[in-house]
Image (cartoon, rainbow, N blue to C red; front, side, top):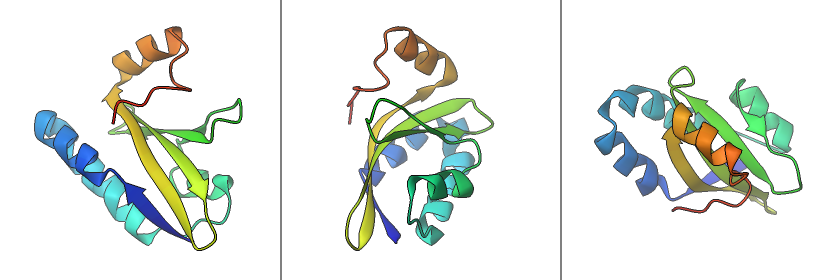
Length: 110
């Protein structure tokens, strides 16, 4: 199934504010355009470093720019599309702080 990316403008805004992230996020966006997922494991096949979060939260963490940035998204497999909601974007250090507070499962900044 094709991916319906929700909140693309969040990524675009982040690229403006973190200019060094632009090439890597543009590459990520190109992969999303071509993605064809049937299961959550397909997300990991498209993005080898993606981590599916546990606890039934239907979230995935993407490593961007060689793990310099992290992005959390919530996924939902519909009947004809995979809906991917951007929930949070930050640096690796910011993500580490988020995890220390156990907020990676619930954060919804966008």
